[in-house]
Length: 79
Image: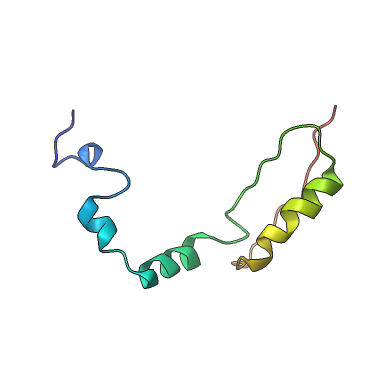
C-alpha cells in the first residue's frame, strides 16, 4: 500500500537480513535500556486476591533493574 520507501511499507519486526544481523550483545543492550521495573506493566483480571497477585507477580520484577523512578503500588478495583 505505502511502498518500500515509506515507513509504513517496512516490516515492523525487521527484515530477514536485519533480524539475522542482531547479536546477543544487541539483545542485551536493548533489554538493559528498555526493560526495567519502571516501564513494565502487568495487568491481572479476575477473581483473585491482591495477596495472591503480589505473591505470584511480585517476584517477577526481582531480576529487573530499576531506573530510579518509584515503582507503582498495587491497586484493587472496588467491587
